[in-house]
Length: 55
Image (cartoon, rainbow, N blue to C red; front, side, top):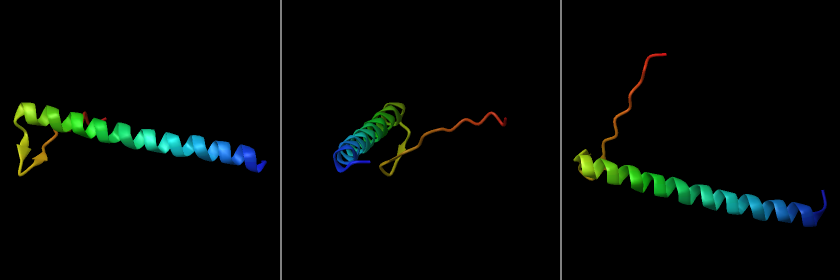
């Protein structure tokens, strides 16, 4: 692989990592907002119910 191609892939992957991090942070903020609306916050920590079907 040439250096030019390597650097282009490196640039793409760095941008993908940054985008994924931003999306995870936004998802966390959304979950916090939903917990706040439902009154499921204790000591500043949202309580999120996890439902398991046992399968």
